Amino acid sequence: MDDFIDSYLLQGVSNDASGFTAVCQLPLTMVVNIGINVFCFFCAIGGCFSIERLGRKAMLFGVSCLMVVLLVLVCILTALYGDGSNPAASYANLAMIYLFSGAYAFAFNPLTFVYPMACYAFGFLNQYTTPIAINNIGWKYYALNAAWDVAICAIIWFWFVETKGLALDEVDEVFDGAVHTDGVHW
Image 1 (tube, rainbow, N blue to C red):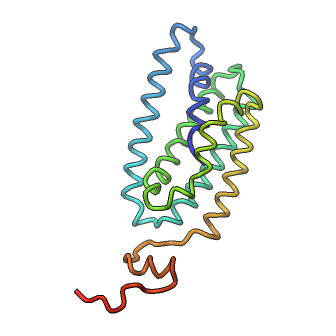
Image 2: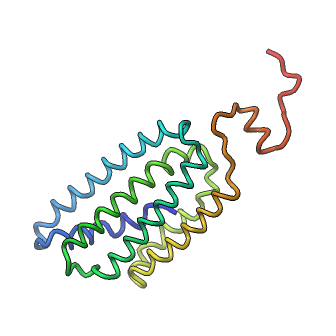
Image 3: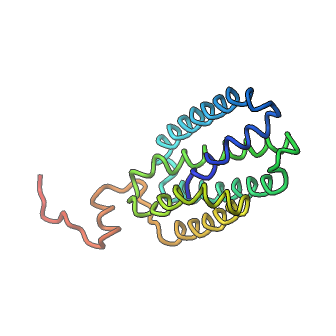
């Protein structure tokens, strides 16, 4: 579950939405790319300040569910209007990609340092297979990723533990089942 898929399609969608010739599309593409990065930066900052208030598990689960919905909308819009025949649908697709990227940045960017990287091993594979998959199966790759995201939601719901408000000793007890600081005096 990551945002490699939306960054790959972003250029094509912004070009379809503009309706400009190829020469005029480069500045628009640059503005769209800069805009999404600035938007994601502020979403990630907001996520950093929301970790303790929302809780890690709730934040990951809620954002993962939102990402499923947004990815399904991107899949539908790309399947129906991916050829650029409807500029309004292309703009809507671009908005869904922005929101998907923002949601990812809100939860997964700040929580990468909280949960072990082993939880995100699929991202490494996804980074290298996305361009090939989109070229070969197109919008169906978004449906495949949405299905994967549903599985991730289930994994988060059933197996991730909440560590909100716990001290390090209490977190250690949650994961190991034993307190390792008995007898330690300061």
